[in-house]
Amino acid sequence: MKRYWKIAVLANIKDENQTKPEGVPPDAFADFDHIETVDAIRAALETDGHSTIFIQADRDLPFALREAQPDICFNIAEGLGGDAREAQTPALLEMLGIPYTGSRVLTNGISLDKTLTKRIWRDRKLPVAPFQEFTAGDEPLRPELKFPLFVKPAREGTGMGVDMKAIVKNEKELSERALYIINVYQQPALVETFLPGREFTVGILGRADSKLYSRHPEWYEKDGFHRFPVLELDTSRSVTPWVYSNEAKSKDVGADGSPGYFCPADIEPELEKKLKHLALRAHQLLNALDISRTDIRLDEDANPRLIEINTLPGLTPNYSDLCLQAQSEDIRYEDLALDILYLGASRWGMLEPREHASEALKKK
Image (cartoon, rainbow, N blue to C red; front, side):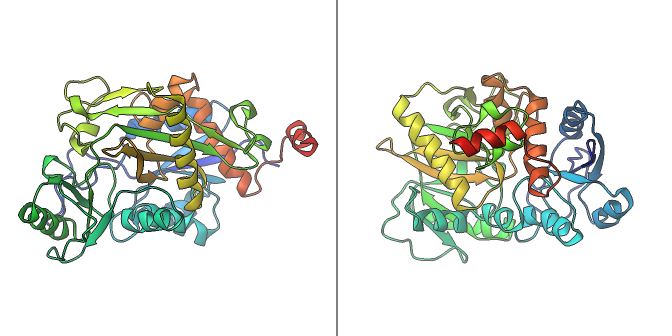
């Protein structure tokens, strides 16, 4: 098999000087990446001998892929809008028969839809806060939802549509906020019970046969998964207290107005075990592949409730939550990126399994 590959890193890039089209939300494109993140991923992948190129995941992507003919794509593309935009690039790659990293089409389509994700989790008995989707803005509030409530776009990421006005305390504020979300973001508003407790995020890496393809089989537990250390987000000190908004997320780690990031979180072993279990189940029930990050918050009784899952977690060094979690256990950025690459490549038959790992598994 080919030892070194031509890898295309696919992403949507932020342009700070870009004029936003008329009618788009004020925080449109907030989850696009900076070119520095793409450069960091490319440099990491090249440490193991591969060559890389960057291709912007825009409307010219099909033609650029045909011209570049990469062996595999490292996908962090967010999509260009519309329903299930994070599934656009995986769908194109599937159609063209080009291998790529991370979750496939359906999972990326579902995970961005917070309401649908919560329904799946709830139906499989995972703990979520009471919620309701508003499509008109004046729907009767379900009796299980009590104020204060939290209102956000049902199909966005990176704290888009989330600021201090997201917390509503009465019917009037609820109606106003729901209508704002529906009109500005052109999608339903997700309304859920406000969770006043501590907030955490947990990364998951791997799958059942990870040890056969990873350069670091020691990372993975017997079930093939690596649970990253739990990261706590202290939003009480952020520019939007108790709200993990896009404004708060945009600030550099440690900057004034940014949340506190504590990893490993200072929590009881029993809570740590529970959070990691919930993150893994959240990952598995959506059929996420190889990498994800799940956000969890405690309710008023300190019970964990799943908020959302990110199947395209950020990979900005020294900034993105997943990278901070890896850093806290001395996992090098280069090794993290390469394991995501090799786990993806192995699913497309591009890697032979490690012989000694294969034999070890047979003995168990």
